[in-house]
Length: 219
Image 1 (tube, rainbow, N blue to C red):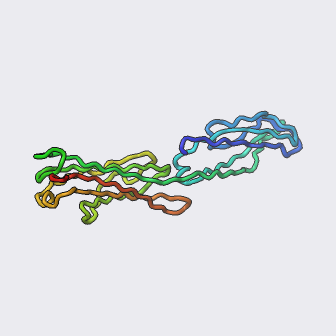
Image 2: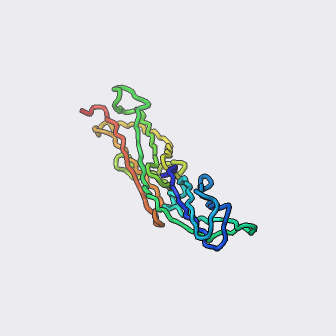
Image 3: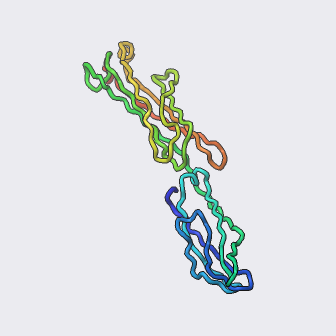
């Protein structure tokens, strides 16, 4: 997860035939400079160095942390020597997910309170949240009223980081005489879809919600 740390251990060995001093590990991804048990090595001697790296959102989105490092040491009276690089790969769990909520409020509530009458106005609000741990893109939200044709809602931004929410444009519905004569309830559903790249493949996630408003005369 973002903010978690990976602990790295580096084994540094003097493979030459002269002593080395000033032993350091070169790793740009470490949070702080690696700490080595000793910084001077006789030929064939080794030391262990340690450091940590804090996982970023970009790395979770990629699903992996690739970390390369080198070691540097200086022979007496000589020029600093740097080893070949060594790389380790740490896979990260990717869990794309999305949720959506929909509310319906009688902002104009005439006649019988808390139920819809002709002339009442229902205000709908939709909120979409990235509940996974990877960034979602290309958010699309479609609204369906009373099993009618889908209508796209404007929801900006269309890219959501984990735990980020977006409120779609709210809208109103004027309750008609025909609605009341039909009776029952007014049902409005909504579906959100977005994509994420998981292990190099594009994956679509979706969530749905509905809001129901009782009409006057509902038992």
